[in-house]
Length: 353
Image (cartoon, rainbow, N blue to C red):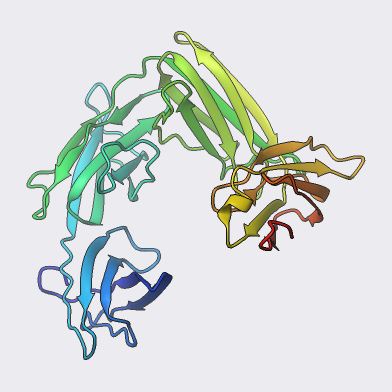
């Protein structure tokens, strides 16, 4: 409930019982805020309360102890706040049509690096914006307008009672290099818009936070990038990935044009009662089609036994897996554009398939 009134929310429960992960969920009614989740084992459950799909974000997490028998009634209290403010340019004039990201720091962490925005708001003609259904916590606000400036505040607290006054955000002029990314579809030649540009500082192993977005021509501009060594990953769901490594020394302008093609993805799970059978193993994916544009790809078997290739040009591939005990496993797969190909390989007591 919020301010004593019932709200609609989705509740997810999770626990581990005798080594088995158990989950359960339900959605409360908007009329009375009640939900019922039957047939739960006793013990400690982690409960996460969140809004129904498509609503602005909030999250309430609590630990609940369930009795061995009978029923437990529990009330979740959700403190939801409305945050209002105005975005100004460096000269103090309102800025319209700018998307502002509100990012919540995860519990137990001290950095926002790589965090995904909880919610977004767009400024109106007079620069005003509003976020609704926001829980208390530590947040970061980011805004950016090409050719005007960027706003990025330090961590600030939203108390349970909300903010007493509206916020005033002022964009600061860009100072540094400008990165321009253009993405096109290999098959159609048309611009790709829903493509991410993940920029990271190589030596520091941290993300460079920005909220730049592509326009209808597939063009994205990241301004105000300070000197340093960077890696830029261009990624889109169902398409190939491009990566650029470069060094920025001053206020230069770097332009990257990437043509992405539709890909298939291969995921293989090695299963064994003894993880040492596959731990530190290596794999190699080799294209078998003579006209394939792919090269050979290699990697390590993950500690949980998974092998996940990058997105690959559709066609036939041979996967060679070299296990630590010297056993080599060879499989052939046909990858289809836009689809995942999954396989499971079980290893016996001797570490062989």
